[in-house]
Length: 269
Ligand code: BTN
Image (cartoon, rainbow, N blue to C red; front, side, top):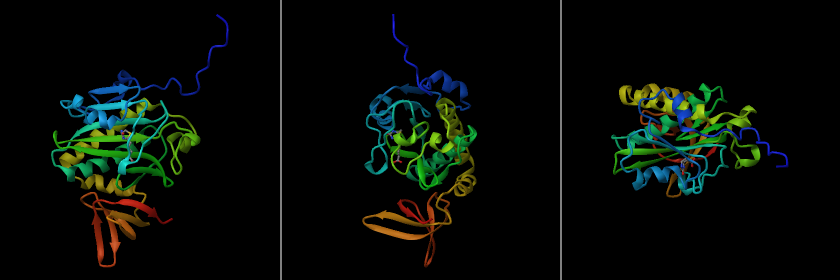
């Protein structure tokens, strides 16, 4: 046979392999049932589907590519094959919507901590559940409650090895931030390790010990924020902190108030 064998580009062998992820896991529950697909419509949709009705708590579905990846507010979430981490975790949330909101925020803290564990760039938490660096989005989280199960599907999309050209405007990846590629397996395992650790703290000690850590990583605290409150209402005020219910505390003329939901439209420099 003639011809030059095709050289694989850098990172081309960076595949998610279940046994490799498990080797890095220190969890009891999260990721102990783990499925990795090459291509699915959406890992959130799959984990919420009837096929996974009886999936054990902690089940993780990851994909190398999504055909119909979803973001919050009906946005699409796109990432090229093998470049990002795209996965969903089934988390028990018997406390209902309030516990779900906290689990969501705790997932953001887990991603930031895990990226630091693998010596990646420092990420800030943009309440309620984005991770940013210099106001560029690096990770998005879409949590959807499964009332039939008393469980939450926490979907995480982390930009890992995308190049500048492969990212949407105002986004960054670990690679564009650090100037080097990252193997994704240890990051996935580190996120699951940290997420379980933080969920244990949440269940045993409440939100307070985590609240301070989330606040310390907040990209909003100390800045003036414009919040979309829905129904055409917006509000601009300085952000003071993260409240006991996981909401954003804004300084209003009549005193501080905690907002439990809202979309951040603008942040002052
Ligand atoms: C957002 O910032 O709008 C949330 C993005 C969430 C994307 C992840 S990727 C894995 C999981 N599956 C989906 O379809 N969406 C989430």
